[in-house]
Image (cartoon, rainbow, N blue to C red; front, side):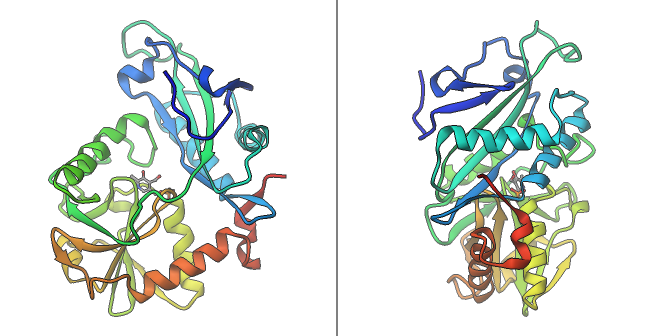
Length: 305
Ligand SMILES: Cc1ncc(COP(=O)(O)O)c(C=O)c1O
């Protein structure tokens, strides 16, 4: 059993294994209990150079996720960053990519004592295009609330946390929509199933703060800086659900989604119902940044060779 996603090799604990051999045993603890941490990183090819976007920040978040659960890992940030670059080189990629570092609690007996279990590290990478096929999407407000920071350390990007996202995503898809916005337990706007959210009202960009229980998105932070430099006013503050329906623009931001305009929420048209001017402008700026065309932000790009 395998799946062809256009990659030949996977990095596993310091060695390369053939794509079809990148397997785990059924007694891998993470399969049973969601005890894994992961990252989603993009690399962009500009016809000349392959750049990894904000590699350092993604590796730092992965190590923070490990720390928040006390899982332990045999590799530090330098080793992981090098392993990620080596994986892209070994595969000979010349395309835009998605990179998925995955660190999971490995083989063990039944039970929740993961202290003695090895943390198995995989680095998977593959050519990748758009996460959403459409230019603008239609979403619902999920009936499920985002996992709260009192239940799990929400800043950790942990495989087990994503059952919450899968519930919201399936609810949306099964009702004929593209994705879902989750509210937090206070009923305020939190984020998408795998994206942060930004709204525009009267020319001001609004995005929920970390205290709303969001994942500390690297795209969100990057865009806040890029938009600020481009003269936009950005406010981090709690957002009421009703603001979703009265916003001039709404868009998801994230590594996979990049900047994805939301054209309808719960069947109600957002703004004009078309991709708005702020999202359009940010998309152009962001593409320039990730393709290495803006000197100021070249520091966010790690050349692979
Ligand atoms: C729940 C959730 N929120 C937000 C994001 C966006 O974060 P980033 O921009 O770092 O990809 C992601 C993606 O990783 C996510 O899974």
